[in-house]
Each structure stands twice: as C-alpha cells, then as structure tokens.
Length: 137
Image (cartoon, rainbow, N blue to C red; front, side, top):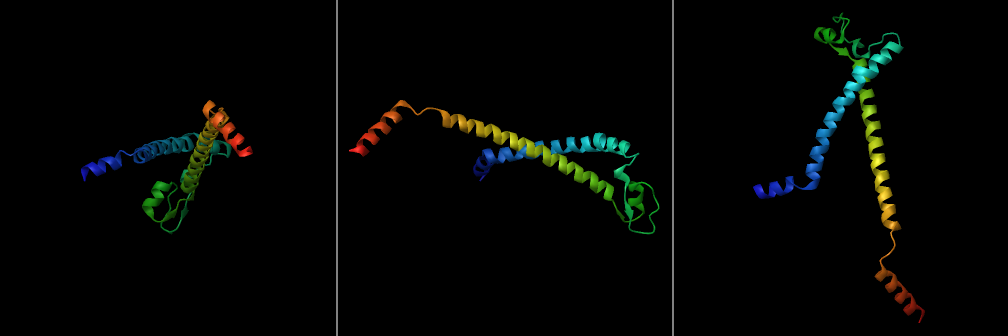
C-alpha cells in the first residue's frame, strides 16, 4: 500500500499540480499586495481619497461605526468595497495567467513549426520515391 502511494505521489502530474498550487498561492499574495498597497491607493488619490476597503452598507440599525472593522463588531454589514477590491485582484490574476498561458502556447507552436520544418530523413525520402515508382507501374 505504501509503495502504491509513493508511486502515485511521485507521478509527474501530482507533483506538477502541487507545485502549481503553491506558486499560485504565492502569486495570489503578490497580486493582493499589488492591488491593496499600490493600485487602490493610487486610485483613491486620483478619485479624491476614496478608500474602497472601508465602504460598506449597514444591514442593522445598531451599526454606527465609520470603519468596516468596527462596523462588523457592531452588527451585520454588506462590505461592497472589500468585495470590489477582491474582484480587482481576481481580474489581475486572471489577466496575468491568460498572458502566461498565451506565451507558453506561442512557444509550443514555434517548437511544433520547427519540428514540421525539418526535412525528412534520407531513408524516408528514398522509400517514398520507391513507393511512388511502384504505384506508377
């Protein structure tokens, strides 16, 4: 049983998937920081100091706080500003992954074209000529 598990775990697809998940999690943190620490503050400065992370709608009359953290302590809130920030994070991650996959596909296509452009080996050319001569008879 242990041997079967080791064989399963060492297959290329499982290891590749694990590496992809780890890199994806780290990439997600980078993008989250990019949006939260760089893009949203600049966007807030351009729009007159808007800070989306603290935008919310109180769902209870007991909520009187001005910040999202305090409002959550007081009652139910609809944190639409936080949601907007997460949507922007997702859009950036999706765009980056799209560009990465597009680049990889382009490289694979170039390799395929190079393989197709290689001339056939001499033996195959001779065999094709013999086949064509036999077909004419």
